[in-house]
Length: 291
Image 1 (cartoon, rainbow, N blue to C red):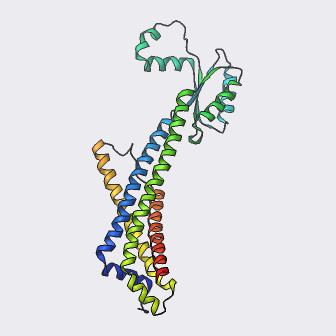
Image 2 (tube, helix red, strand yellow):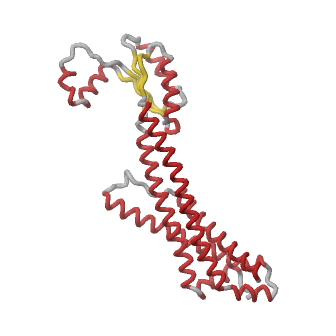
Image 3 (cartoon, one colour):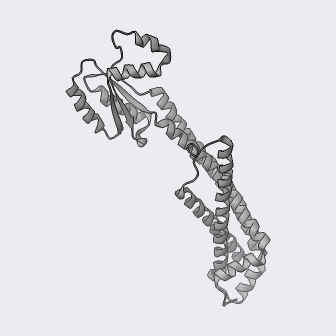
């Protein structure tokens, strides 16, 4: 036994107790699968909110008769705002043409007009990190400071409701996510504890022949890490199969629903390894204290 490395000892466990080892891996995999599905839903819900947030826009209406030079200078000044992603100046003629094209029910009324009632405007899109009520209002207030700006609108009520929805989604996601994680850790911990208890006699013998605690822990920690890796791979694979089936069922072409990116899968794997290591360490130390 002294000539075997901790890695070799850990691998031998899978040969000696294949059923129990498979149970541990399945326990980690299915527990992480549950967590993964929840966060996959949360990820896509967040994406949907971000798509809605892209519609956050500040529109500043310009007084009639404003000189072209004033508009050009204002365009440069507004573009320099730190919150501004894109600015477009819509002339009175462009505004009327758009209304005729998009507002079908008023097409006849707009066609017979002798005087264009629609003003020119600045249409301002904000950067992603500034698409909330506070920043939209701040931009609107600055725009009102220009003497040639007649009115500024940004859909205040709608943007505020979007902010509340994002906050609520974040809070609910954290609470439910932590709850799922806690349950998963308990289930996995119990499974690993059963594995360690089955090898209690082996641990006692190793202590009798003079093995140090560090030497005894080594194979268990490596075993826990391997089980964590395999369980993490199993969880990601099950999430992918479920995601693919759901996407095929809904007819999504890959432009609406998204799967985990490299960062999310890395975090999931690290979490799985951490659970395997942590569960093994706690269970082994508890067993060492009892012998």
